[in-house]
Length: 287
View (cartoon, rainbow, N blue to C red):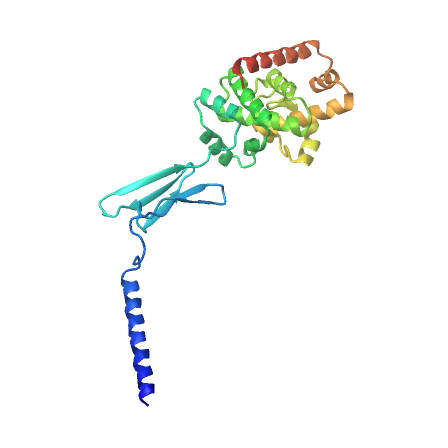
């Protein structure tokens, strides 16, 4: 019996010690941890590619509120004293554009944030595929956007960039030289998406919708006549038709004659002059 009581007393004392340790841990959660060494910075990535840096525990209290804007992630935290607020802003990684895009935007007083806004405004725009183009094609877009604004300063910056991206993108898609397409757009409308002729030619590429509407409807490019005044739909319609003429007639000259609607030496000369002008612009801009 004495042995049993001895064991019971020993067991109770152990329980008492454990309870005291538990209470100590609850009251002082940082006990046994170094209070002088801060946690290192860690990084995590959101689904949209945004990299978020979590600062050390000594810098911020545990009450951290995070809000996200289009261009930055802002951490707002109350200091340990509770007397002031501190905002720490970390910019998102820049869009994956070629440096020529940034150079052309800067020359026009714009930034990549303008591209982002235009992409949001036009979800189906080829601008949303700009970052996926090869660097050489992005350079071409930058050059064409600058060329459009030079030829026709009345064209808004957003329209110029949408047209430039569409001209390059659909040239690749339909296997037509982009310089040729740009030169035709200049000859036809000076890049004005609202242009229309007495004969019924519409848009940037002055496409005869009343003639080609069956194909354009089937392709979903221009189900209605008014769609031709969209800068990118108008470009795609013209490039598609030109590519078909090039396949059907074998040479660029014959395809241009068909596109124009007859043999027109002056038209061919104008297109060639535009190509030379575009090349001079390219050489000068360096894009």
